[in-house]
Length: 244
Image (cartoon, rainbow, N blue to C red; front, side, top):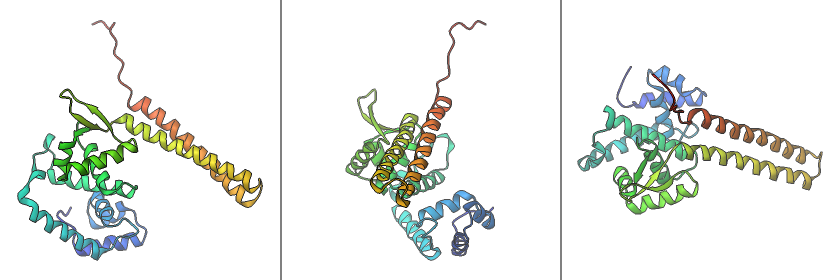
């Protein structure tokens, strides 16, 4: 399997594959590259609908040039725990950040959230985030306030009374529940439209179908979230009356 950076010819093949509607895995197979490499390349350069090989190649060259110029600073070269490859971790964080941006988060908010999720502790202080991301404390503060508003992070105090920003399983569960509630609100508004537009009219039928659909999806999300929390996040029971 070839390693190293993608060539311009490979990027052209990626663009052709996307135009033909091929999945990332199939494009990766044809290029003998990991699927993650193709996913990262496409998401970093406009997504599947806006990817252009020439622009992607120039953007990669610019990023490489900036990293080379910034190399003497070196904070990102700190050793990784558990024997992780620092470059692989950095590239994965870029991929994760790009995916979060595609879902609607602004870039700095996406970077902060990706950094928290890829940290073993699942929590960092403002100064730790600023150091890891090489940004100002003010940028971190603004990003955290935004993410808190979406209930994607929470604050807590550690034993040294430092404020830490946390991501955990409960926050992910609450995010799913909020999505279900949003669907319920959409269904309610759609049904209000049925009364306004007249039951049985084409517009009202369309809205009623929307309401039924999002009702079903919302209920499925809520039920699945509850089941997943019970099965995946349940703490193991301990028995005190076990005997040897």
